[in-house]
Length: 372
Image 1 (tube, rainbow, N blue to C red):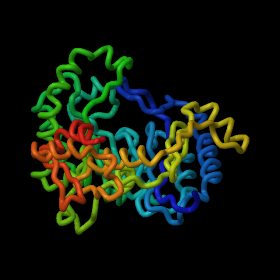
Image 2: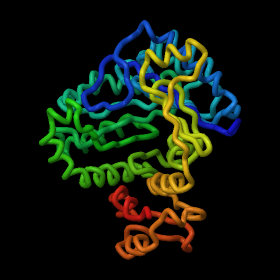
Image 3: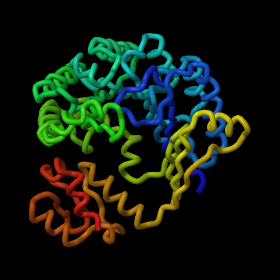
Image 4: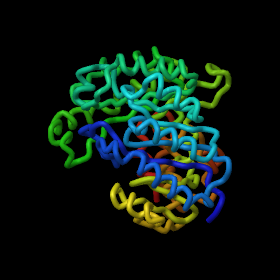
């Protein structure tokens, strides 16, 4: 269990405020803890460093709002992280200033994933987002000026009060900015959140329209020259971008079942046949690493059966065929024949499995049927 991990996730939990629909591990404000948290991250990295290759393939800084982190602390972290071919940071548009964009660029960040969510002010208000559509546009241009040439925009559909025409306008606005990558997610409001309580009836109505929304998303983005390479993700076709493969290499590692190391509160790691998740408590994390100890973790041994099922479940999210070699026991043969007869799945020579275009629209349901 040493030296083979090529993918690193770093969790920066700090946010200016917590959106009502969010269920990520976040900490509001706490600017006084940013430097101390970076200290703890680098201590955890030192404790786990032997697991990683050099150089890495990907580093991904997620959150929270990583770009809300104090700039001095953020730069110190970026300077200290291992080298990687793809370095992604998540950003909220309102945090992207010329100074921040230059900080990212000079410290090796070559991909920025930005949460636009919508270009309709009333829908942004529903989501409790602070950025305006003009903030999104300004942030994209600011990053371009700093020579960041790989920008991903996040959009959400199924927002209370959203109509199909609202979604089409959001897609048109996003495409006008020429992002290399787009992630389009259906809104998930976890039961028990204040968002679900406030908008429960409208969320039920929106859930009935989701299939139509994703069809609109796919039709619009593929017509604009984007590849629908994963259930919720689209990248500009290589022939439109100098031959570059603009898929998220870090997220591909998850979908392809690669090992990865996660640092920070709530971060998950999967290495070999073990998965662990750091406890989500900031104070306990800082205390443990301040004393030179690993943070409190939940550890789960991964049996082959679990790994194979996950490989099928995640692999079928992609537009590339999934090799069934070694995974035969995870797929229900009878269900597979039924999905083929319904035109929802195909087999290439019996050894590689792909969902059809229609099957991908119904992806989660089809995959659930296929899992033995």
